[in-house]
Image 1 (cartoon, one colour):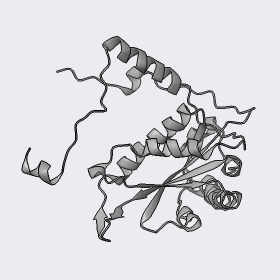
Image 2: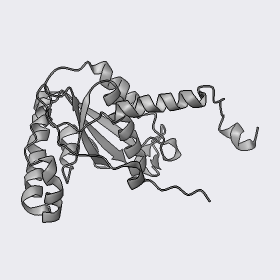
Image 3: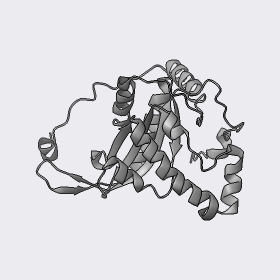
Image 4: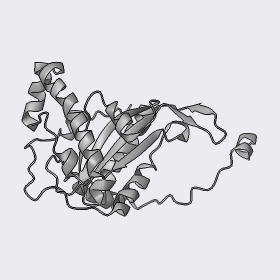
Length: 228
């Protein structure tokens, strides 16, 4: 064992699992077929979701890789109607400003097929809002501050796993990013040192939910292979 390993102990990679090639294909095909069903939803039911479902999805998100394993994220989970109402009111202020003044005509044209506007009723209807915060700095047990490395990339990876976990559980999600989102710090009591990353809406879709008729890119349109 090297000196550095004595200072920073390691353990065997005992949880790794290797699969035969055909099983690899089967597992991936099954996963792709499942995740390909995922759609962003804007019409939510107010049907309750057990808290432990959300907790397990959050634990899955926390397995994401992060710069220096500093896990630079915080998830504020909102279920209270009063707080959801405050978030909706603040978000709609920013959204009206966006649609009426900030967004370019090109941006509005890109959004048109999605049918979005400044009205965000799902922020009150869905049983859970998960505000994702990015932490540029953390605090060690002795009170010292520590810089977080690649916090945006790390938080994005954790959020992607969270979305996937909620989908696997049978829940719908919506990534909502009003800009600016500093009102989330005030409403949720988060320190100014944390930056709101996005607001993830989750729950069951409404019985009459509809989604835009859009298509995803084909593999060749977003992939290049370098074999030399």
